[in-house]
Amino acid sequence: MTRTLVLGGARSGKSGFAEKLAIATGKELVYIATAQAGDGEMAHRIAHHRSQRDDRWITVEEPLALADALSRWCAPQRVVLVDCLTLWLSNLLFSAGDTAPGDEEFVLPPRFHAERAALLQALAGCAGDVLLVSNEVGMGIIPMGAISRCFLDEAGRLNQAVAAVCDRAVFVAAGLPLYLKGVPC
Image (cartoon, rainbow, N blue to C red; front, side):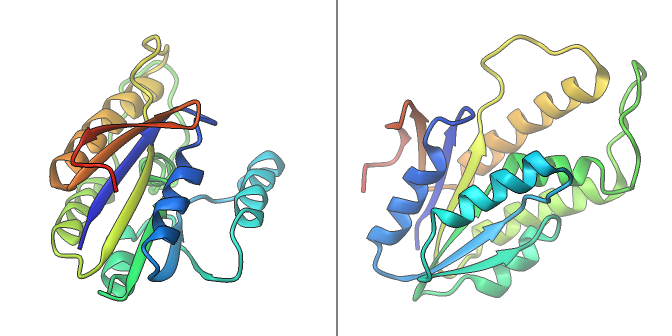
């Protein structure tokens, strides 16, 4: 059982890299998609990602209960690919149905901490290989607005916590992997 975190910026090639790693295992392929099509542009992105995968993949759509999905789908004969943690984080931040506040402090919804803790616990106990894709958002400027800064902070904390329980962490830029933790596969 191997847990791998694949980080990178937008359009860095991280999802494609993670998919290649999954296929190379020769195991049954499960893709847990966290994205929700809230608008036409996001629907297009989701369709693009779907078109990249062939019928070998079992696709599970789970925007919030990621730990439950991992517990359900992880098995020794499978590799589970989660794409992506930062979309899941966005879903959690607005899971209470709130809209983005103006300049006032953003309060994390009650479900946030429970789901985050459950994810880390599920990762520690997964019975099969897991690949987790996440955006590295902390390499740019500090954004304006409370919700943007909250997202940036929580994404950084989530990536650090997930990397700590993973066997490997890989940063992808321009389609090229840089292994931060563990050995190349």
